[in-house]
Length: 285
Image 1 (cartoon, rainbow, N blue to C red):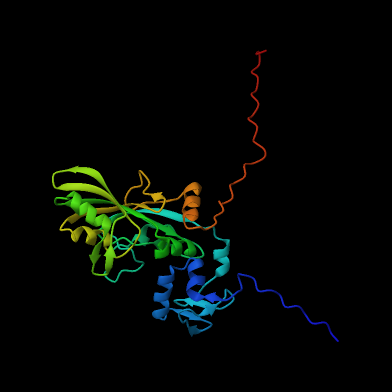
Image 2: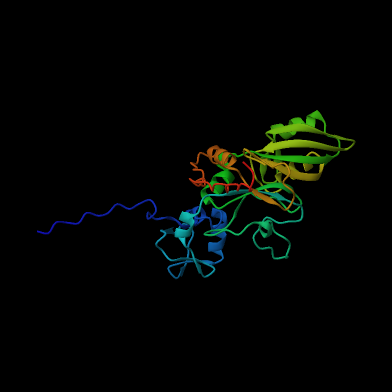
């Protein structure tokens, strides 16, 4: 009797998983973005429209807008994180139906995936936006269960009493549920225009503005200055980006319990070119 062949174990890379998770991890958008693409019929699996939660593997033929996804290219790409200084007037979306400038217009090209925005800023808010090609990192940094803190510099108009600060820290009822600041720090100012630094751990739409408005105080300027352990780099001008250095990238990954390996450093050449020997002039001894 012929010996039975042993079945090869399924590796993690081949094991079926939800299409949102697979495509997000491969850097093709956040899980919410992937869900929107599926709902719009822009993703196909083996020639058929994809379904939310569909189990797939990298061996399936997966297409976004008719372009086949290459998982090999992403496997060879190193995880990257960019800090971008968003100016007012730009929208945090890839395509804007009104033709307004988007935050993606200024980012560098990326092979084997696309940049994922970690969180959003509305059109009238400036400051720090993080981008990555690692969908799992983006998902953890944005997931409510992680409660990643966001810090904003806010300029307000109107009298801010200690009672108002206390209510903002204790919590107020907004139209989409209770909300509060984790911290409110007086950052100075004169007259009715005063600056505060506020921290909260949610990313609801216009939440910072709505919290102040609930107390009869108007926000005249809003800028995000930190997201998790990353602060807006000094000297980074509006509309410009910079790649996070390895030590900051490692700290960001560690903040959401993800492993990270630094990129390999370039090896220095083992030999150096010797300087040419000086020639003696005739008569010099």
